[in-house]
Length: 221
View 1 (cartoon, rainbow, N blue to C red):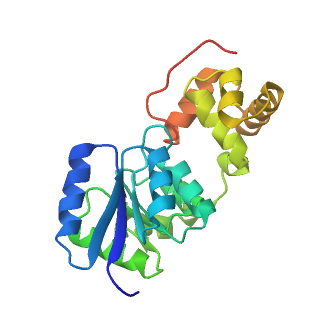
View 2: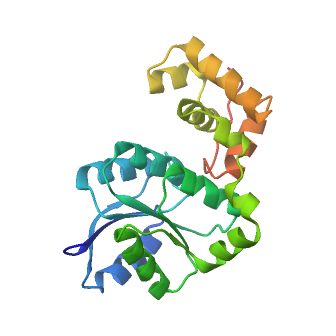
C-alpha cells in the first residue's frame, strides 16, 4: 500500500489507549487518525475516517467489540479490523473472525508483534497471534465449528445483547425502531435457538460470549 498506515484505536481503558498511541506514533509508517472509547463510537469513527486498520478491543461499552467489528464489515468501508484483547479462547477467536476481523492479537504480546500485525492487516493479509494459531491448528474443530450463536440472525443478536443489558421489550422496540410484537418474536426465536428460558440465563450467556460488560438486571417484561 502507498503512504502511511492510518489507524483508529478502539479501547475504553484510557491508560492502555494512551500506551498504544505512544507505541504507534513512534512508527514513521503509522498515523493514528482517531480514537474511540465505546463500540458505538468506534463504528461511527470508522465510517467517518475510513482508516486502513482498526485496533479493536472486545470488551467495549454500549456495543461489544465483536458487534462493532460486524457492523464495520457490513459498512463496506474497506477498513480492516485487528482485534486486540486479553482472551485467547478459540470460540471467541472464531466469533471475531466470523464477524469480519482480519487479525487477532493478545494484549500481552510484545509491541514488535503488534506492529507486525498492523502492517500485515494493512497489506490485506490475515494475522493470528502465534498462541491462538497453535491452538486452532491443534484443535481445528473448536476454531471452525458452528455454535448456537452462529444460528442467530443479526437482528436476533442485537435483541439478545439489549435484553442482556436489561432493556425491556418496549425499550428495545424503540431503540431498534421495531414493534413490540416483532421484538417478542425475536426474543422467542433466539431463546429457542440458544435453549435459554429466562433473562438471567441470557445475561450469563451474553457475559460468557463477551457481548456485554456489566449487565443491569430488571424484571421480566
